[in-house]
Image 1 (cartoon, one colour):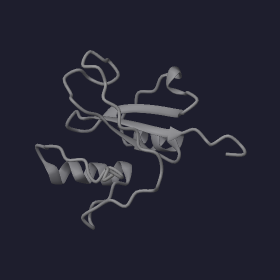
Image 2 (image 1 turned 90 degrees about the vertical axis):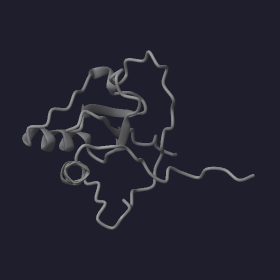
Image 3 (image 1 turned 30 degrees about the vertical axis):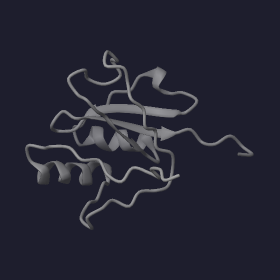
Length: 121
């Protein structure tokens, strides 16, 4: 059976696509200069949320979640650049650690450092 094998892209509107693209490249390392971003292999969660969920702002229809390799260091770098990242203790879970913020246009962005696999996995 034919089926989807991965996310091929994330497309969204922007008031200033070039400036917003520069923000993602500068602060999150999402480099689109080659036309596509080559990312590391790993899990991708695809999960519809209930319309009344408060997990991300109710005036937004989507949120992008980036897997990161060192959440503590990334949050420190963002903070040094004047970019606040919200963290909560309950965002440290068996699946990893999380931080959340909005990009310069208010689109919700989540940062996820997956938990290390248990020994023997």
